[in-house]
Length: 330
Image (cartoon, rainbow, N blue to C red; front, top):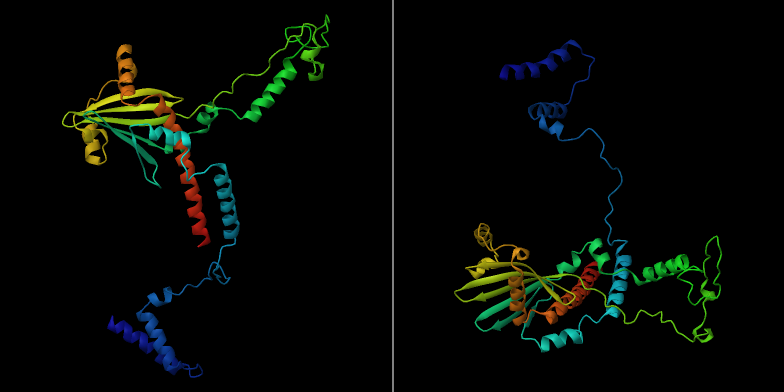
């Protein structure tokens, strides 16, 4: 290695002696050249290509969309606040809590809500979540009810298409034609007013009482525990005032019913906790439903839970909008 380095250093001197017209390199150039030979990585540290972007980086002091986003959030807040007072519990919900043995446990910012009570030597805890409302897909939402405006349009189209003269739909029509080739459609203005009818009859076209909009299915987790005697866990669905039992489980240790740790969850996986509720004898199913009703898990509770979920979700949504707006404006 040393001999090669010596040869390398002597080569320039021999060339300079043989060719006197070539300019001699300065000492600084020789030092730089020798340093580059000793440390080849320095040459590789400097790229020989241009940067990807030649424009000067400019740091935006404030987002251009921020004011527009903040205004939209404020608009949404205004609409939601005008729709419902999220700070005050509706009277029907407050009335249930005032006349119910259950105590409400609801923490702001959390999805889960609990109802607790004592029944003899039993400790009863019912939990439900506003996530059931947010997790509904479009098909489930469509089954709960159609848009009234769309229903009116469909009804008008059906009336215009199906109402014909000379048939069963010609009652109360002026143009009651009897053509052999078929019937013609009866226009709305062809209807006979009740006062102009010969028999003085009046046809009531109203649908009677307005149908109540169906509620969404709310899942309840019912835990009934007795000290030292285990616990029953029931998976229940509350909808339209009905309490529908899905499954009934029994655990010797109440903490296994609501396993909050991986160890407890692993311990309960291989346990036989009972058959599907639908496989039970019908009389046994009825008695279990009465068992829940006797403990206050009845029609009143089934009406309360979906309404409370709807109110709480509205309140949490308004809080979320406010928090996002505060962050954007900060």
